[in-house]
Image 1 (cartoon, rainbow, N blue to C red):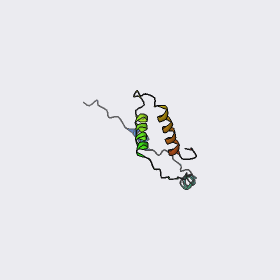
Image 2: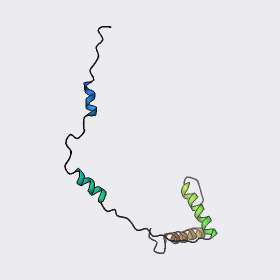
Image 3: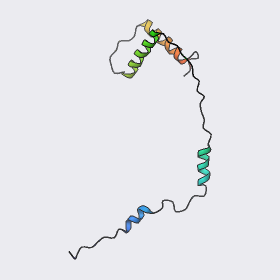
Image 4: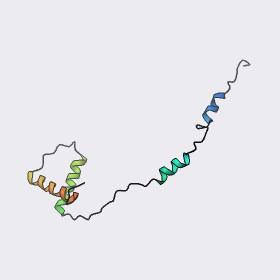
Length: 98
């Protein structure tokens, strides 16, 4: 096998060349801007809610309905619908804002 010639791997040095041959002069400033940028933190207001056993059962049922929307269910009765709406208002707060 004297005719076998080994191929030079000269092209592989391209894999190890620096991607940015010259360092950008403002790199440190750009990084400091991103790191030192003041974060806009939304104030969190915690509230304590108290529920009756019936309200907890209704909330659990509503969670199951939301979790499995593809299951066929009958529409709730009008009084239950009103109770759900009152419970929604109680959970969202007096202002009704989310």
